[in-house]
Length: 98
Image (cartoon, rainbow, N blue to C red):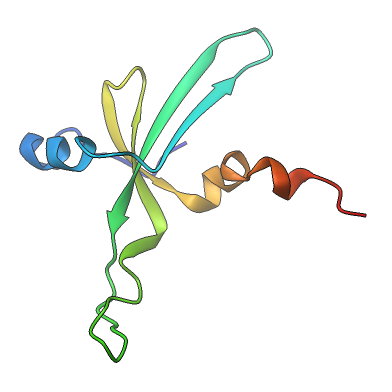
């Protein structure tokens, strides 16, 4: 699930500039029937203008949302960490430490 389809809401040049660099994640979701869906995510700039004493942004990225390519990179969408958080957890998070 995603929050919004951005294909016609953002300028194509802006999308190209966001996606030309390294992405944040590549997530491959596999259904029980074997179908795979790949989601490539990209960090979204922060919306807060809070800076430390040296002038560095304390929230350089949006802490709630990411941009992503879905549907074989046909759709550029806005997704929420809340929805994708379980898929973004590392293997060490899932290991039993006891």
